[in-house]
Each structure stands twice: as structure tokens, then as C-alpha cells.
Length: 225
Image (cartoon, rainbow, N blue to C red; front, top):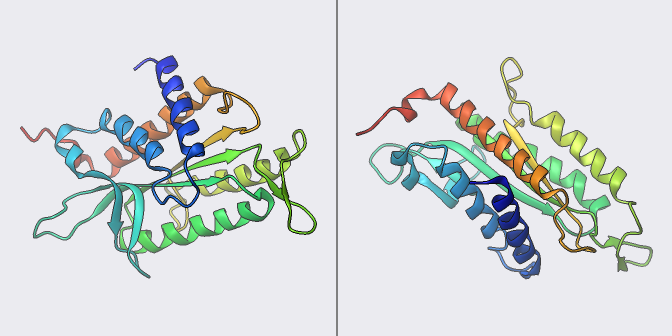
């Protein structure tokens, strides 16, 4: 599909996501659906039925629902095994207080599943709002002024880049194989910043995840016909 068409779709789905209530547990489902469709183009057809949203996966500490996951086999007598997992997050309010927790949560959630399934491929997608209301003195939330969130998000992206390099010999739990940062600004329209660049980064992100999966588990890609 043409990058320009994908850019239009991505802009629209992010606008829909922002309009959805923050209390809606399926708020990020539209983004998960986009990723699911783009992944299907990269995976052999026999794996498509095993790529699902909101998939439950066991971890060392507890079972967790992942936003998107390829679990194969599933629903059979064989133990289900996650092959590729993607976690979706966003920072849409109080960025200065949220970004450290996002990094800590990332390390915790991926470590739990990696301890049981060391070869699993994990991707992390996050939406950053440069117009996110920020908590001021007295607990009042107000829109940011100008580019005041730039240094905060720069620190977050730096920390995320440090975690998104799980390749031999750096094979530690808590790292991920790739990340995709989507930057929006709800103070402007359209809200997605640099749409075609964002699409290109997303395509490269998915290519990297599937490439790593192919290297680790080549038998998954054999023709099943």
C-alpha cells in the first residue's frame, strides 16, 4: 500500500483514538488493528489465524493480556507459545510524571514473559502528545506552552532507545526488539506530526520484528500447503 494512503489512515485512526474516552479499555484497538493488518502482509497465511488482539500470555509472575500477539500453536493440545508480542502505550496527560513510569512498566512486563519464553520477539509502540495537559501548582492541569514538552519527551525517547536493542550479545531480559514512537499534538490539526515519516518508521519497525522472528524461528515461515 502506498505510504501516502497509509499516512491518511494513520492520521484518521489516531484522531479517532483521541476522541475515544480515556475510560474505554478498547481505546487503542484501532491502532492495534492497523498493526495487525500491516503484520499480516509480512507473515505467511497459515499464521494469520494466530495473530490476535488482546491475547492472554503467561508470564513468570502472572498472565498478562498483550495488545497484539502471535501465539502459535494456540487452542490445541500443545502448550501455547508466544512468538511475537506488541505492547501499545500512550502519554496523553501529565508527561513529566508519566514517562519514567512508562519505562519502568516496560521493563517489568517484558521481563516476566521473556523469563518463560526467552526467544519471544517483543515490540513497543507509544503515542506521545506534545499538547498533553500538564499538572501545575495546585493540581490544576493546563496545556503546555510552546515546545516545553520537547526536553521531557527527548529523555523518554532516549531511555526507550536504550531498551530497544535486544540483539545478541545484548540478550538481557527487560529489553525489546524494536519500538515505534508516534508523535502527535492535540493543539493542532491534523494532529499527527510528520505523517509520512511516521509511516516509514512504522513499516521499518514491523520489518525488523518479523525479520528477527524469521531468524529465530525459520520453521514458522515454511510453506504449509
